Length: 406
Ligand code: FES
Image: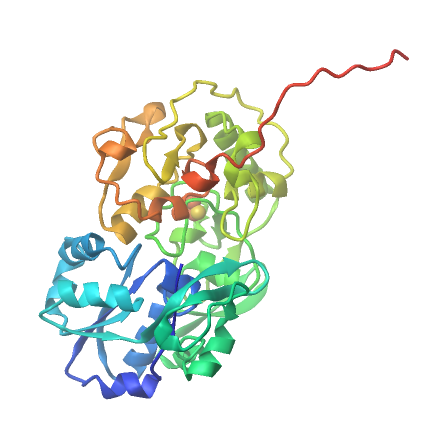
């Protein structure tokens, strides 16, 4: 993993900008995100800071692997982003220095500003977070198998370990509304996503098809809530808060529906959780479906299980696609379009025959897959996994067990 730290202050950044600039902020969603200075959240913070200071920010764009020239080019040409990129005069990019060179190449007609310094390679550790183990010579740091923690490196090299001050991001002229969630008064930004508002206030609503990095789809229906005055239940993930809303997120009826939905998902395929690599929770991977099934205490689905086995696509050098574990939430499809910028995977067939497939239903290695892992990171179950962890699930070996007769 490439390790980078922030190299300039917010004032340094503003000194490179003018109020006439038309700015797009983009970010790699891989190493730089793990280092705490990239990703959707940080782009949003910076966008808010610049907007509050009167700069013209046209938009933000998340790129699965920013150092892949092809992917950056796809994003630039993407029909939904092309106009924004064409209009921009400045690109502020949250990316490692290698990615910055590629970004300058793709956007050679624009001013491209980087905010990072890249220090070498390292690892993500369970207890110490990201550590730098192989510093570049230019850092003056010795190689160290223990690794250097990022705050230590930041101090030594006069860099910034964190992103631009998030507190400053609370400035944007947001309009706030008062709503009531489960009887409690809550203040929220007008039009904010209801599921996010609930989570920010410690109210967990079960969800599977929603992912904050992706567009809203509302297909799994697990996040249904009640809103006073609405005839029907509404999905919290596709609802935006308005003044005076009164919301119920948790009652017997809602939980009954959620349970039925989970049981239907369980019955829709043979999920084979016992041997699934995502069944073993790690900081990077865990099965969101399994977690919900445990939370609801479901031991068995009341519905007949579909035991039809579909072949596992093991053809990619880095990704395993197991359609038997797919819940058709569409997160991978949206990630491939919105974060990878490729649209390589999509739904094929109709009704109960619907499956996710690569290209025109070819093996992954025959398709345009860029192996950027956007789909793998988005998948809430074990349907798409990284090959290196795929076979780490339990291998169950039958054994003869002899019991003494009572
Ligand atoms: Fe809201 Fe799936 S998370 S419908």
